[in-house]
Image (cartoon, rainbow, N blue to C red; front, side, top):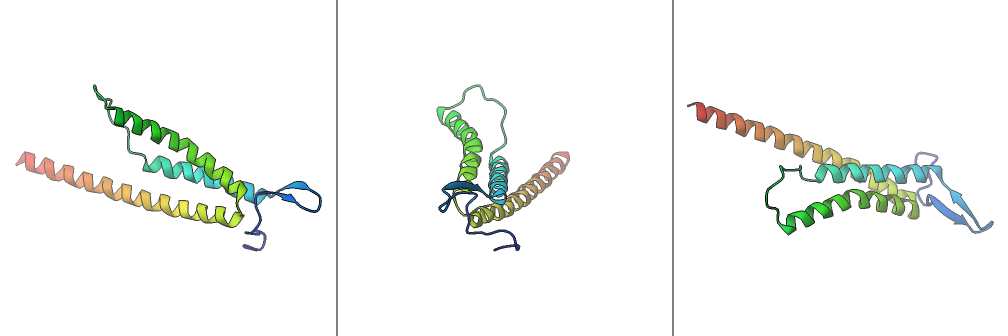
Length: 129
């Protein structure tokens, strides 16, 4: 038992053998939905920014864009489904991993933005001289 109320070995939805009824663990369902939401946020952050539409696009670019759009929605749904099917401990692991990945990606994106601003200032200074 974690946090004195969460049994990490139980599934979010499981069949009780004695009465042959489905048992719904509200904590497991909430954690599964949270992991899906965090998976969506993580995938959205890692997608490249949309560029200006080009006159001529290659089939590879179109295919990549279509795959990214599908992954944006399919991965969170799969994560929720697996979170409901596997023990709660695994879902909690996915949540913690996603939170750390989102923080890491935010730091990287911020430092990349700062580096681009510095490069633009250097270029402006060089042009003025």
